[in-house]
Picture 1 (tube, rainbow, N blue to C red):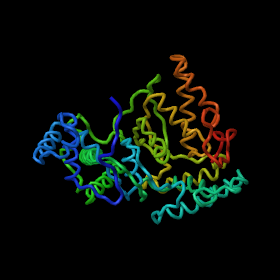
Picture 2 (picture 1 turned 45 degrees about the vertical axis):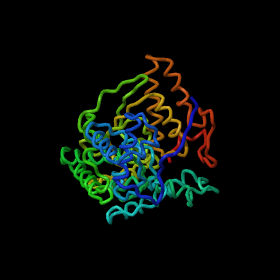
Picture 3 (picture 1 turned 30 degrees about the vertical axis):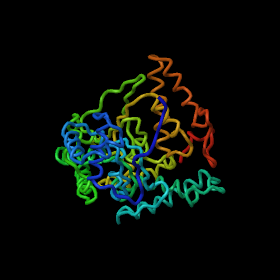
Picture 4 (picture 1 turned 90 degrees about the vertical axis):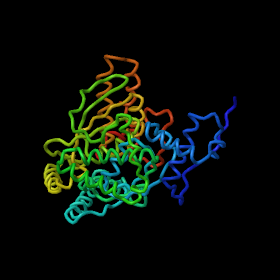
Length: 394
């Protein structure tokens, strides 16, 4: 039998697929599983038959048929809402970057952001006086973009932002269900209260409400609430072809690392707040003290520089894919250092157990991706290069 492929439906900008169309599509596609008819015959079937299949699939948990229809959503809201959606490991996100754009902030955050934007730019140019050269990143000098990358640690994880996000009809309804579970059951801590408010605003949005189908939820498969925010203790660390490790990372770092959706991430807020200190200022004790004073002054806003406890688990092959992207002079510094440290930790613990796996990890300790990638580096203007791609302060 030869191969034949044709498009029977696709996402179209400007077209808003109605809930009825999606449910009918699911009913039709259930015919692939239960009918001997061709797809053309199924699409032309009596609407009463389609309605019966809709009812059966919704009630018996055969919800995969509702994953075919996708929606490209323009979502505006707090940064943490975007993190919650990204944590679902749907790989279709285009988000406004606080690394490359200035943020609109609250009255008490804006002066601190502007203050440290200037401090970081000055420190960067002093440490790397030729960093700008002829290189322009997204319309601005590299030193300015790197200063923004560090100043955004002072901004709240609930700072307004926006993203284009494509997810299936089924995934959207699963998110609504899990958000409802969190709102009803999660402890009412100061952080959780803001998260609940954010989730409720998302659920109450008219567009989301229009696409909501209560029966289309993961409870029929044993699904629970939001897995990304962990309230129980993390599992013990383990090492092998599948690993599980625990570490501290800032909110901003988590937003970077959990985009590697082949890996699983959970976060938990520590009992007492801790904060990330950008390496470019770590050797200046006065600046460190000033930084900690300033970021602590906005702690109630949950700044992106606040450290959270992270559990990361997955396959070694998936970690290698993450390292290929993050061990790079162009990657965010915190996530680059975290990935380098994790590669060393994995190798140290796996080498006595399984030399074959450790051999796959050893190249990751040589430096940035351009030192271990077979394909070389796709970047045209890398300032740090293979020598300083990992050993840098910015």
